[in-house]
Length: 98
Image 1 (cartoon, rainbow, N blue to C red):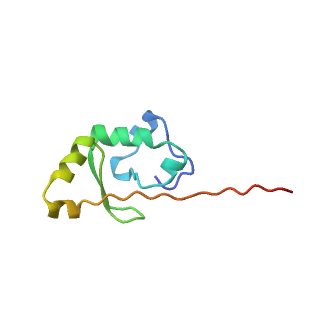
Image 2: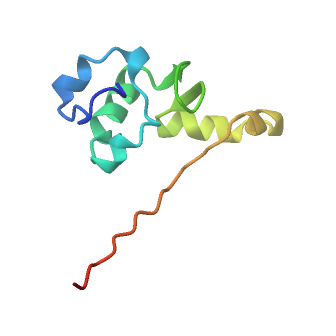
Image 3: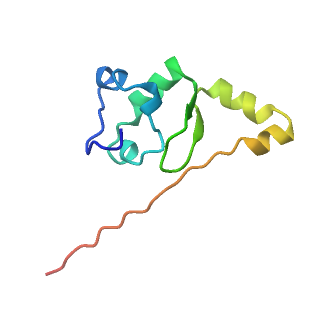
């Protein structure tokens, strides 16, 4: 999935990508605002999705609200295993006053 410059954004196109290649940590999904069909597919087909081969390392995606709530309500040791990370990258544009 990381090799293409433009991310597929149509639900039909996204449905052709093997689940094992869907990487919701790929920043292009958010920069191109194409993340919605990926998350919908994961919620429908693999609400708890494991990606073992990611540039950020292996991770689990929990994509349904109910499943997220269950994880956070578990005992403290389980909560310590379940980490949520959100990364933001600030983009600045400088105007040229030539």
